[in-house]
Image (cartoon, rainbow, N blue to C red; front, top):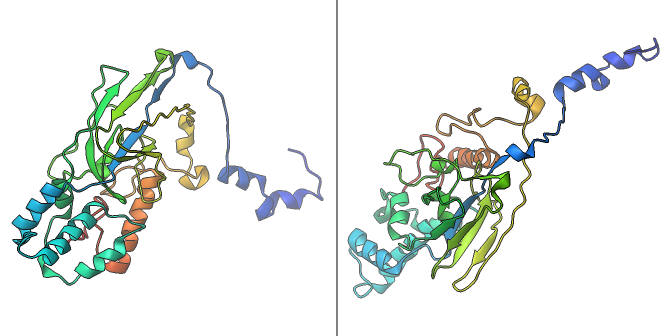
Amino acid sequence: METTLHGLKHTVEKKLHWLERYNSEPVVVSLQRDYRSWWTTFPAVTACFLDRVQPDKARELVEDTWNVTEESDPEKYQYYYEFIELIADVSFRENLQNFWKYQTDDTVKGIDLLDLALTVHPSSVLQVIVSNNDHEVHWNPVMTEVGMCLTFNSMYAEFQHMLQEVDWTPFDLLQCHYHSGRCSVRIDSMNNAVRYFIHSPYEISTAISNPTGEVLPGEELIIDYKVVEIQASPSVKTLRPEQRRCKYPDEWISDSIRAYSFSLCQMHCRSRMAVMFCGCRPYFHVKGGEHYFAF
């Protein structure tokens, strides 16, 4: 580096110090050309039924839990039926205000809300056909900020997993090779109307996720994806998060969420805000802390 005495002050001035700027914003870009050895991970799929309550299951639950039938007390029956619908079809952005009418009702307190949503969920199975016949797909029931859904190929689904009494079992993600020619997944929604969210296998579906599309009975949705993968050099991890402006998956959000992604971070922030303002954690935030919300 060369400088004159006139320019010397600019090398030590805080706002223009080039060493400080490099330390805070280092950037190195390189291009990997060995594309013949490339493997890429297939996106995750989160499927949400538009009708999340199976009527006969909800009817049985109302009768068993509150000893009310549609014939004995139509008004009370509708009241509890709407409560079940609200639990299963909760939306962080749209219908939280509807819980107010139940807040002082002792008859809905002490209920496991995750179990309730799981109990009344339709029994229909979404059939999946994968181009890689060796890969078996497992749908995992998850409670999202837009209600109960099913997901597969999502590494972080464990942080929304509804079966809390069952230990989470890690699984291999579906991958595609550059030379595979065709890498595809076909999902048969049968007679169900389904809203789909296609996202990174290292992310989750949240309240601000935009749906990829809805498929009604008799309809077909075809989506093509082009893979763009960006990898960081191993040496980048030696930098401080403030320098690289990102975090690695093993830089945990909290003890209950031992991972990191942008959507997990957002969900955790909303959960902490709920605890701050309400003193409890919403049931649709399955992981997040000690405080738990239940009526």
